[in-house]
Image (cartoon, rainbow, N blue to C red; front, side, top):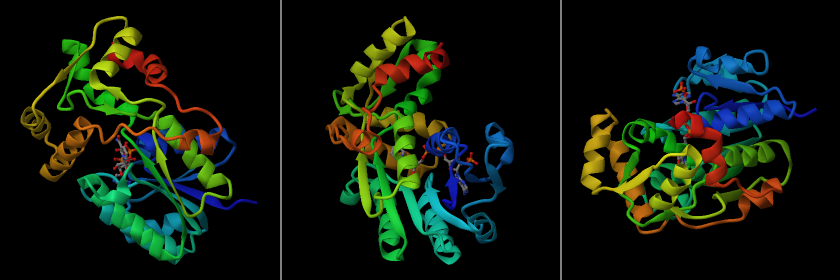
Length: 284
Ligand SMILES: NC(=O)c1ccc[n+]([C@@H]2O[C@H](COP(=O)([O-])OP(=O)(O)OC[C@H]3O[C@@H](n4cnc5c(N)ncnc54)[C@H](OP(=O)(O)O)[C@@H]3O)[C@@H](O)[C@H]2O)c1
């Protein structure tokens, strides 16, 4: 019988997909969560362990008897948290870690890549089996624009004509589930993208159709985007990392389209139009 799969980040976007899709496949995962109240949808379907990636004792408890780990770090401290989790996984005898990383992490050209690559390197040197999922920007990031789309029929982004091959989080989850449940993914790094690269204006056109009312893309100067992000209370280091990514988007560095989703899952990645139709209600 297959050993236990521990999923981190299950109250977030990709970890949530992974937990839901494992459960749908008839597997009962273990979930490390900071606040079990946020994981109510998984009650009775998963073993929920309260803990924190920064707390060694809770990591030790959560990792006991685990064979495979789905690892999500997030925020400015993500790298340090993931480092702790990898140390704990090694101590606990975990065999395989599937790490959520970032498209182009290996090039370390942008700040987020420079946060992820050291964790990848730690795994490469750990003696554990590893798989790196390196997705481009998630389609779900558009949910961060609900306020302005509802209020002003627009979203504001300093990306000009730059195109991004946005990916449906469900596809990242599907690749993770394959890597966690089938052999042959050890030592692989998958660059994951959606099926086509779209500019902000093209995404706005897709949303306009899905919502049945006009949505505009407004290109803004990076400084204006910075002021808006600082105004939300985001840590300065995170704002700078985002601006770095947005600048890369503007010059087309996130426009690559890969066939990894299809190769690993056997089906084509979902389109932004599909995603927008499924999430239209959230913008109304
Ligand atoms: N967004 C994108 O377009 C994109 C693209 C490529 C790669 N990525 C990478 O994807 C990762 C983020 O994934 P996501 O968007 O799925 O995450 P998310 O939705 O932001 O959720 C983060 C998850 O991590 C949990 N978490 C945070 N700190 C924790 C801690 N100290 N201990 C235990 N759990 C903790 C959160 O739990 P709580 O619910 O308790 O907060 C939540 O479940 C980042 O590494 C990012 O660089 C993102």
